[in-house]
Length: 378
Image (cartoon, rainbow, N blue to C red; front, side, top):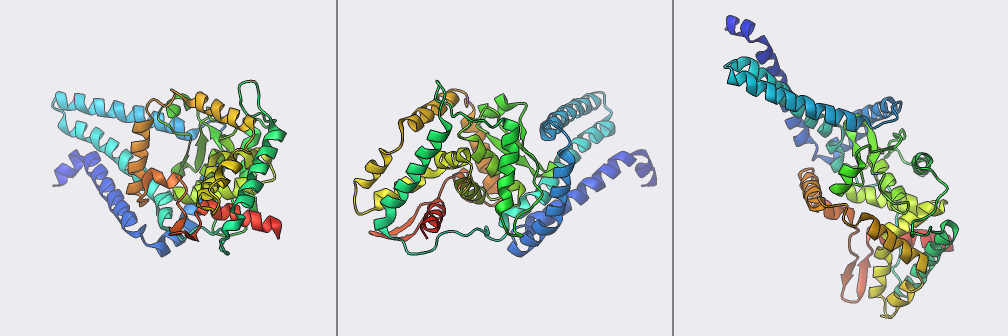
């Protein structure tokens, strides 16, 4: 045994380390479904780690996540090929060491991701004040009209170019700072206060092909966004990823927080982005009003420039996401593995609860709109 340990020291050490990491991973996977453990872990270890890495990676103007990912991919491919060559010349133990090294990298990355991100999926419900008052059908048209008018007002301020793209005086870099600043309005210890500065993806073309518009990689505390996104979409997408960095990992919660922050912003571009991404949820509520013409009447109030912008966005993405189905399926599996039973449907608003002609509860997005409307009217 002593001779074996001495001769194959690297193999033994790698095996022990991998075993310990796997045991830690199993413990995390078991504990993360306990809301109390999830909440405590998120507010202590995860928060401290993520805020530290956010500051550290903030000194780099490029995406650290991209660089490390591609370097790690190349490293693993080289080591796997090296291991196969060693096995081919019958240097089995040396080859096994190369395979174990790759295994340790993979297991370590999965463990670190679970420790910094997936533990947050089971934490307490989002701390956000939403409308919980009486649901009055007679107010539906007035509420929808109010926000459509503001949608049009945002367009009047912004305008579109000859192609239909929204005009903006904000550079992409300044936009990153402005969206991050919106989180300062959250007055709750539920959220992380030190947030990373969003960075553009250098490989936006690749991520476009699989339909990814942004990502938050918790082990590096870094937010990356797809620079191909249009001006109308980007603020909402950045806000969604920043929500993850703030400790909101569930996709439906991140969407809800982005809806709230963008809709209640003083910045016309941000409100426009919120409307573009969520106003259908409000307008669809008109199908449940007592007057069946309300939906068409309010929808017809949307300005022609907004429709031109919709067309521009459609044409902008058309044909570029040729691997979208593959990317969506992988993301769906990922979300379900981490406890979001609705998978990629978590990105969409829920439906209002209805019993016959009675609306029992509004959807989450609708509750944001109603809260904002009644607060303004108070």
